[in-house]
Length: 392
Image 1 (cartoon, one colour):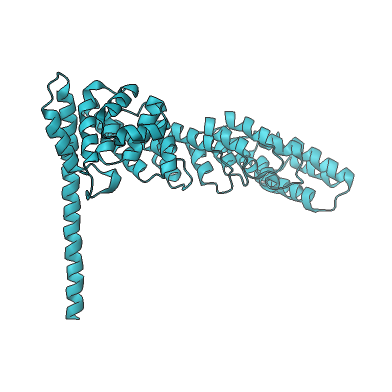
Image 2 (tube, one colour):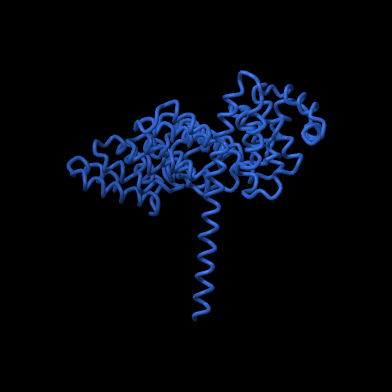
């Protein structure tokens, strides 16, 4: 009887009043002691209201039923494909929607709806994977910020590959302690590409110059990353570098001239296919012929061999001992020795190698000067503190 009167009233009521009455009917359906006949009539009325021309009416239904386990499934599923601002209410909160429903929605939904799905409590891996694969950047960021979401490692990698060039997503990923080392390096590469495109678009540098500078910056960051990586994870980083085409002779020479022997050894083992212990013996053996054979098996360019040979010899003689900066910074004394020895080489392709070594030497000198100035400032600060204490 009540529902019949409600339906008669709807025919002449304005949209705002229809929305208020619809909300009241939906709450009565959930919370009032209605007879089975009244419940069925109320459900039929709400199904009819799904065709109401006013979005205010349908939104009223969504607001009441969004979080309810007792809501009519037909109404909830219809609201889930309504206009975005209405659908988002249901998709973010309704417990009646299955993971399969949500995965289907992600594939065709607009960004606001994808973001609503990404914000769901206790979001399951399958839905997170769908968002990572086809979701927009906004939805992926909401997913990463959702503390309740179960996100598989491959989904993290996919978001890094798709949106690592965007600062909010990149920063969120890098802030994760459990982020795999290869994903961190991939994000560094994305950042380098983004910076190169930025300076090129503003005509600050030519395209080739910007790409070259970005490549060197990425290699520098990669060696620093490897220096902070546990030994048992460096192999994973090396495999990622090889798969992504970044395991170059220039990167390996930089690693060796930084004293990052672990990265260098893992890289040669990966490139040559030889066991790590044999690679280590060839590198540290006094007989250079073993290293020469290893170098060739790794497929590294002959033109760069003199620099590697001299760096290995310098390392064996202890040139690295006492050098500041750890395994993340180029060592100036080692570079100058290698540069001096290579300058005496007599072959056509030595000049590009010397050019690279000179750039390394300049970079090392600048780093050394910066560290020296920082130490001076620190000493002055400490001296000032001590003097103030004496005066006091």
